[in-house]
Image (cartoon, rainbow, N blue to C red; front, side, top):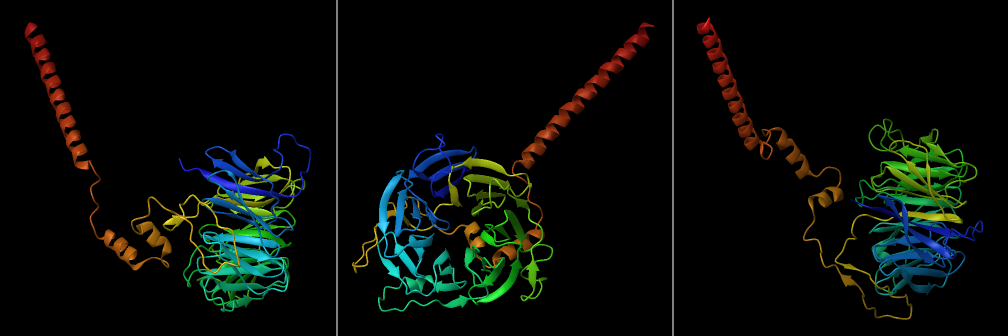
Length: 439
């Protein structure tokens, strides 16, 4: 049975002297299904919002108001490294083997964890980088200055030391600090988009490769965090008043695509699908499961709540960590792409100019791209898949395996039944004839 796991992180001092909670624990690794449990913990970490990164082998946690990142090995279950940086880290995300970090000075730093190479950009934001999001091709940074910058990841990682690091474009429709960024999983220029949340009580859906604002959503209070579902069909938003909103992008009245209104039309989001109790507080972080049916939320009073989106049931409290829960992230059930994985990280160094790649080869690399992978990576429906589906309508239905054998057995059984009935009929006739002759 496929298991679901997620990782949570807390920030700040314990809320009470609860002896049932382990001391000094800052990061928890949970198993959600088939049964909820805490699999392992990592100590001595205080992780702010948007400062947790999880890979197949490691957990990266920036520390509150410090220029440090703690690196924990998921394979060995211990703290592997204590990494210092030139500036305090305000947000981070992980893309492959590259840790992308935003600083309090408005700078972007990229650390290749398999080589130790550290790339730093000039301060292109005038305030702290509050959130970052990335794809294999782009990095998006949101800031307290209300701007969002779009960067080319390949250009940022160029080996030319003289290269100037400039964002490709800026998205500047918001009027207050950016609180969240979420990217669609597509890498095609035709179908990818991002969603930003801001303290100006709005979320904006962008085509970040062109810089066009596709739709603006207004909320009754300021959004604190947001997430797209894995198929990019809905946006889940948590607001300051404790409300949770689930907005479908391709509903009966779609926000994007055919049948949608003009991009300049502002949409007032209707009533929330759920709300937290005052003693729990608004969700400061959230994460959607990979099948899109379950939502996890973390709260400042220490609770982790589970919301059943598919059946719209009342939320269930999974755990109380006795400190503000600032990060919740589902662990991907899919194996990481690529022939290698980073088992031991290499600490960053700006003095080095010759780098050594450190990694472990995958003992079972994929032979070729599967049909499912090709369908997922294609734009819309591939031509080959459409032609195959149309051709299937013109072909006679194939006989299921074993159908002819089953039909033969049924005919033999009916033949036996007919013979038994004929024998019973003959026996009855003889009995009637014998009784008549006796009279």
